[in-house]
Each structure stands twice: as structure tokens, then as C-alpha cells.
Length: 320
Image 1 (cartoon, rainbow, N blue to C red):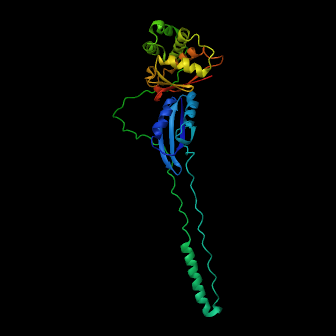
Image 2 (cartoon, rainbow, N blue to C red):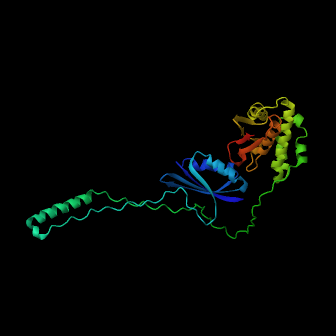
Image 3 (tube, helix red, strand yellow):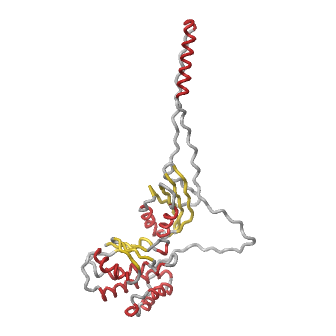
């Protein structure tokens, strides 16, 4: 797991934290703390997030694509070393006031003319000084950047000792083929009502083997559907295969919309639990379904966001 500091400049603050927070959650990260500061050029947002290192690029891509930001950067976060915001306005120093030179004083030998001349010139200097604009005041110093931390609560009397364990990222395991075979044993008779079997599969295997097992179940289901219903539809390009095979077949299982090379899945029943995505089944399903149909080439399916991580819908991007 890694901790990252997100710094962004936005035009306004309305709904900014909610929108960026959803992007962070959809990318597999958890929000640790956040701060908003007004600036001469807009709103400065700072967030500290925590998540798996393998999803850092996914988070950076989601932030770069967010149209709420004028500019955004991601840095490694180090506790106790606050980093100045990269977009904070610089302090400006105004030009020094220009004071007109004193007028020359006539010599006493000039007699009675010296006094009025000196008086007129003195008045001219005073008028020029009064008309000169005041030097701009130095702007007040920006508040020193700091994180807003929760106010510590008073400890309960005689608290029991708490044993904490460090987080250990699970190493993905190979799929549990026996469990997959059991879940799909009656596929020919149960399809398309197979969601209960898939949910049972997700809860019966080891946590580290859940995604790989769902992906294998998806590939086998997709291959079976292709052979049963679309065996004659081969040699298509990717866009045609998605439109005529992928989207219609997926609609038998869930509600889905096609937007170009992306499939948007609404209210996925496999992604209802926080942090337990079931999108690997849909990716495997499309792989087994579309692979035999498209012209020779490599099929790539990328999960853009998932409902289980706080997104409104699950999105799969398909490319070759």
C-alpha cells in the first residue's frame, strides 16, 4: 500500500470534494484527509489518499481526465513533511514610491524675488507628492499550509490494549477450478439466471482467488454463449462485435449501455459490496464471447471504474 498527496487547482469549490472523492474511490484508493484553500487563481485542493501501488497510474489517469481541474499533480506523501501547494500564488512586492527631488532654493542675493519663487516651488512639490499614487501595500501572507486533522478524543478510562496488525496486500491466487466447475455445472439449464451461483462462488473461494475464479467463470460462460448463439458471426471488427454480440449478450445478465468502445453496467449485482468488485466476471465473459468473433487480433478489456469502489456504475473499456 502507498500514500499519495493530490494537489489540484480548480475554478470553484462547489461539489469539488465529492466529485474528486468518487474518482479516488473508483480508482481503488481510500481518502485519508483533505483541505480546500482559496487562492488568487481559484481553489487549491489537497488530498491524502491510500491504496495499492499497482493502481497509481489508474488514479493519475482519472485525475488528468477530470474537467474540474485547471491543473493537478500527484506526489508521494511523507508524514510530518507538509509539501507547499504547487499552484499557490507567489507573494508580490510593489514598486518603491517615487519621491520627486526637492526644488533648488534661490540664493539670498536674489533679494525679494527668492521668497515667492521658493514658495511656488515648494507648493509644486507638495502638490506632486499629494497627487502621486500610494505605493501598493504588500498582500497579507498566505496562511501556512497544514492538514486538517481530526480533533483527538479524550481516551476512555482504563482502555483495553489494542493489538494492531500491519496491512498485507494479498498475492492473487490461481482460480479455484473445482469451485468454478461446480458453480457452472447446470449452466445450460440455469442461464441466464446465474447470478446466485456467481455470488455463491465469490463467497466460497479464498479471497485472493475470488477475482481469478470469477474471471474463469466469465470466460467459460462467454465461450458457451458464443457457441450456442453466435457461432456463425465471426470475422467482425471490434466495434461490430461489441454492438451485435457483446452488448446484447451482456443485457441478458445485467442492464448495460454501449458508448463507443465502452460498456456501462448499471446496478451490477456482483459489485454491491464495498471493495469486492465482480467486474472480473464481466471482463472474462466478454473475452470468451468476443474473442472467437473478431478478426485476428488481441482483445484488451480494462475496468475503468466499479460500483463497489463508490462509482455510480461499472465501466469496461474494450480495445484491440
